[in-house]
Amino acid sequence: MIRLIAIIFGVAFVFIGVAGFMPAFASQNSMLQNMAYIVSGVVAIMSATHIKLTQLYFLIAGIIYIVAAALGFGRHGDLFIIHVTTSDNFLHLAIGITFVYLAYYTRRQHS
Image (cartoon, rainbow, N blue to C red; front, top):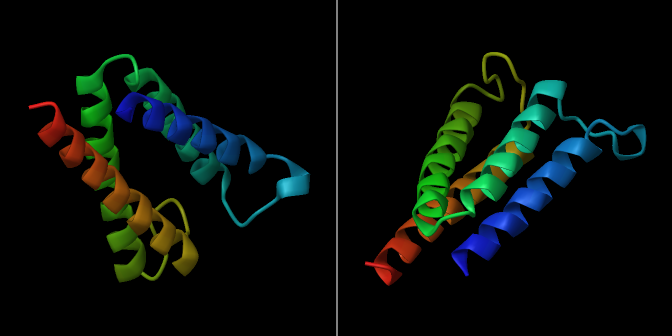
């Protein structure tokens, strides 16, 4: 089940990243932010090959998203090379919390 969730998140991230490059879906995301979503999505799909890799992906990506949200809130959207909005920060925080929860929830289920 967790592997399917990783694939769903992966496809969604790739779609969001690719859509950010299309003029019809133009958003405030920078090219680097779109690339980060695509990479995150591809790694999520690749991690779905094994349950342990999926758990590790959710844990590491969750921590990265939480740190990105904390830096975004603390630095008023300035993530050094990427500028994010408050809504991006809340999205990253929600993704991070969800990912860390999934990593620990599945670890308890499969221990």
